[in-house]
Image 1 (cartoon, one colour):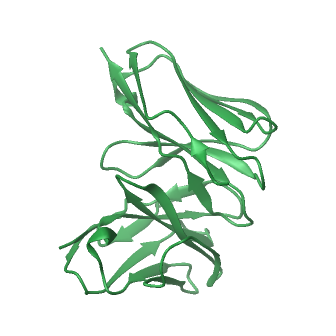
Image 2 (cartoon, one colour):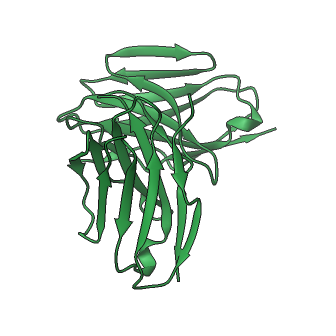
Length: 111
Length: 110
């Protein structure tokens, strides 16, 4: 099976812009979760989608949003970018209450 | 609380054994994961413990004590390629939300 794929892999934006990241889960996986990883805060949970519904949400501001499509692909959007949003954004897919597998991530740099 | 504690860094010699401890709050606990992450790469799955006891997978083993809120990852016959960060993560809520510890950077020296 193909693994989790994420696009784009690298992205440079400026403050105030918005960005959309995409994640395609492993075939058959209906759960997609998003995480932010920074040197200072480590890996932090953003949200999880299951069957097109947001099932869990982390402690991030409303500028961070996401959605899931009927084919389980997911997108996350960050509006009004801030310098502190520079991070590695990781997507993970899995079955119910089982192992999650991570994609390669999108490295976002906000200037 | 959500605190998951693991040492920041450990150093060991090639061929040796290293044990990485992880402690967590037990409320709402579902299961515990260990991931390996090389610098600049995504985390890769190592092990998943739900029940008490030891799970062995080749050179890597993981132990869980649910009542004590304690787990460890044991790396045997260390190789240079094992130099990486090792992340302990706890699943609590319904669904697949993981809370991660800060990670333990393991440096394997010749």
